[in-house]
Image (cartoon, rainbow, N blue to C red):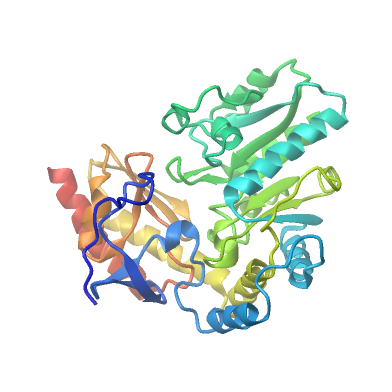
Length: 398
């Protein structure tokens, strides 16, 4: 089959600067476009396709579920929602889960939890600490929490109640909140995704946990992109040996089936009561089966260890190949969440990589982002380096 892909569709809203390619099918860490060209997938649907494409254990399970029931309604119990919630609480050490459909919805729910937590304590104007370069979504509230003026532009007035601070600077946070009785929560990504693959330091995370305990704030960790095994632990904050009070999840939890979750610990688990929050599609039987099967297969196939091992191999190979190049500012990240920061904007590399048979993205203008499926092999990681490094080197010589 041959198809010509238009740069822009006359019928869909012009919301994405799409590259001129359409995926037809995939298997493992490879996809094939409608013209039959094959690509190595270094993007994983933006950290979504945990198990790669057409996984032989996932597909039959989803087919089985579709043959039973796709959607019922939250008026009734969904057995796999209980199974998945129990599993998520076991993996996180937290206690209760709310299911929704996207990371944005999970983050929106977290913001509502924080505000109600404040109101329940008698705080009329609750405020939430957020971070520079953060990205939490594109609803009016989550884009207000996001630290990117480009995303906010044209949608003012923004939602009030946010205090913005720099990453990894506990003194700056203390100064920004000094004497303010209205602060109720701190909200952040363990590793910023859209902001450029920027990790929180382990010592900072530990200081933050201590500060939240001292001041009775909710610690809310957005693990939408960096969670679900991507860094080699179930959730990226676990490298610091801490537990959040609220943890939004989405992306990789359903291996491509839309799903979101808010996992809460004792401090936040009972803030919402019937009528406070809800969603039509959240927790539907298909999404719940996808989440249950994703975690089962991840455990069976040792994908946390694989993400840690292959990710370390990939990062080391990139660092070695790009060492000494003055146009490369940093190669950073953990597990299979890697950013290569260049000294100037490099958006053109997304198209050039596509032409060379590699899917990736450029985020924060100058950071090449790799978030491939967690099934990636070392051989595929080497292939990725072999495609990407010459493209970067050629770009930096221009």
